[in-house]
Length: 458
Image (cartoon, rainbow, N blue to C red; front, side, top):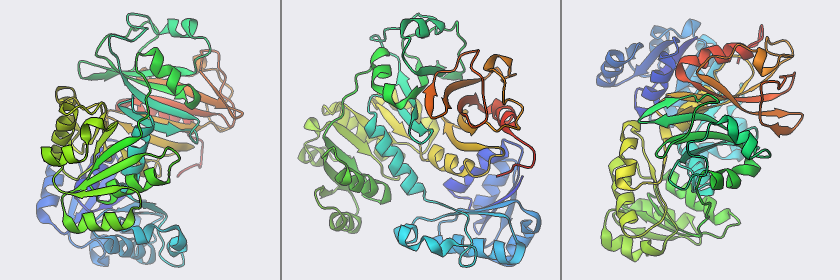
């Protein structure tokens, strides 16, 4: 595919990095020549310096024969105009815009993005995506990573294997025998920093990090089997009052759990805006690294601490301080995936990766075949793909044993006629079935190809 990405900042860079690894023809546009130079030198992409909304710049970037344009500059208005120009001047088929201002995201004004108004096919809000990811972490606090699939009926959960795990040194094939009614499949294992797809004879060891695809109704039981207790707290402290932190606090106020939350924000104006927007949440103006302020927030009696500022170091160090003060569960937003190796030394229980959530949102809209959802795992190391089986695809009517699956890919959960089932070798895939597959990055294309049918794109 020929894709133009407008904006070479963090979001644009990560999207370009992921898509260029998949042999797409990528052109990145940004007015900052230093950013373009950096991205051109580090990635296999073409760089164009200029304003993305200018017709001549888009023409230079190849908009005349582009399949898609992703407008991810720092300006919502530039992103919107870029999509309009791409549509009116170059008839680009697919237009995705990153919009941050909450006013543009209000459902009341969704008609604005119709083709005869402002022709944007997909609106992506990174802050909203990250806020939703934070809420998912809070819903499953014993998991270091989680994502929902099949309309919420299945989940991917990341579990750190400890001494209390009941199935240590047990071949995975025996899990079905030991827990015959459990609807869960171990699809990925990270051991000594390396992620791999386990076979039926592989065993789990202490300090492994595992990824499990599970029926949502079996999440608590699965965590218990792997030695993780599921405790939902009702007292939370949030550091960061921007769009992400505010979104989480507002969602907690709306939830039925009656969570008592306190929000800490360094910038006074931002803190005041948060205080005006919140009803029950206590807002404190100050530094999340300040020990006295954390004591004022009563951190030692909090059930969960969530750091979601735009600075990784602030998030991780404030989590470390909260953990040292006695908070049992600390969760950090981490933009730089290379820093996740510091989680254990700092005592951080779980993390939120904005890169994964944003990239996943974009990938969901550019895959070929009947791909319903995609989630990027780790530092773009693997993907969980949710796909629908079509009657005309090559895998329809075949059992899983008969399909030539890539070695580094594994089916986790299948929905058949509305019912979640754990796949076995004799499970037959039929028209309408929904399949979730965990695949290392090198095998994503091969998995995608299995679900493709002729003349079926986007």
